[in-house]
Amino acid sequence: MNNFIKRTISGVGFAAVMLAAFLTNEYVFGAVMLFCLIVMMKEFLNITCGKDYKYSQILSILAGATLFTLVYCYKMGWLPGRLVILSFVPVFILMINSLYVKDKTRFDRFANLYTAILYIAVPWSVLNFAAFAQEGGAFDGKLLLCFFGIIWGSDVGAYILGITLGQKYGKKLFPSISPKKSWIGFWGGMFAAVGVAIALYYLDLFPPVCAHQTANVANYAGMAVLLHVTGVYGDLIESQWKRHYNVKDSGNIIPGHGGLLDRFDSALIAIPMGVIYLVIAHVLHI
Image (tube, rainbow, N blue to C red; front, top):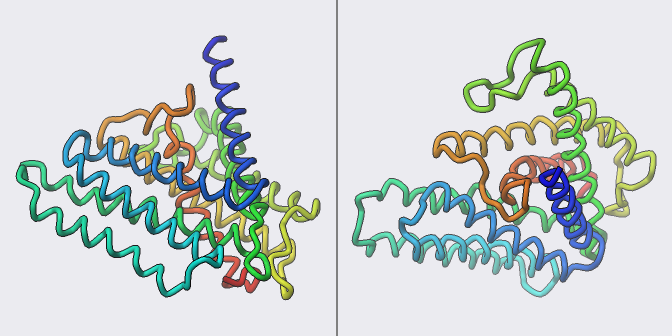
C-alpha cells in the first residue's frame, strides 16, 4: 500500500509538471524540457559509462543541452536558423577532448558519449518544432500534449491486454529483450492509440497549427498507428540498453516509477516520427 501511494503521488506530480510545461507558457516549457534532457542524458551515461570519463560526460551533456537551446532560441525568434549549426562546436570539443584522455582502458565506452547526443538530444530538440508549430511561430504545447496522450494511451492499452491475455495466449513480441511484451499487448496498444487520437480529433483538441491545415480524422488515426509502432520500438531500444548493462531502471528521480528515460523512451522515437508524418501530410509547416 505504501508503494502504491508513493507511485500515485509521484505519478500525479510528474503529470502536473508536464501539464504545466505544455499549457502555461514557452518559458516553462523550455526550462522543463531542458531539465528533462539533461537528466535523461545523465541517466543514459550513468548506465553506459558509469564513473568513467566524468569530465567528458559533462561535455556530452553540454553538447546536447546546447543543441536543444539553440533550436529553442531559433523557434522563439531570438536566433537565425543558420546559427543552430553552432551546436556542432561542443561536439567537436568533445571529440578533441578524447585525444587527451589518459586512461584508455575502457575507451570503447567513449562512443556512448556521442550516442547520448544522437539518441536523446537530437530527437528531444525536435519537440520544439511541435511546440512552436502555430502560424507565426507562437508557442502552443497542445499538439505535444496530444502526442503524449496518444503514446500514454498506447502504453495503457498494451498493458491491460498484455497483462490479462498476452501472458497466457499468443506469442511474445521480443522475448530476448522484453519477455513480458506480447503481440496481444501490441495490438491492444494500437487500438487504444487510434481510439485516443479519434477522441482528441472529435473533441477538437488537436490545435489548428496553420491556416492551410488539411488534416482529417484519417490523418490523425494514421499518425496514432505510427506513434504506437515507433513508441514500441523506442521502449525496446531502451530495454536493450538496460538489459545489456544489467540495469532495471534508468534512474530513481520519480519514486516508484524509475528515471525520466524510462518515462520518455517511447517519446524519443515516436514524437519526431509524428512531426515528420504531419509535415509530409501537409498538416505541420516548420
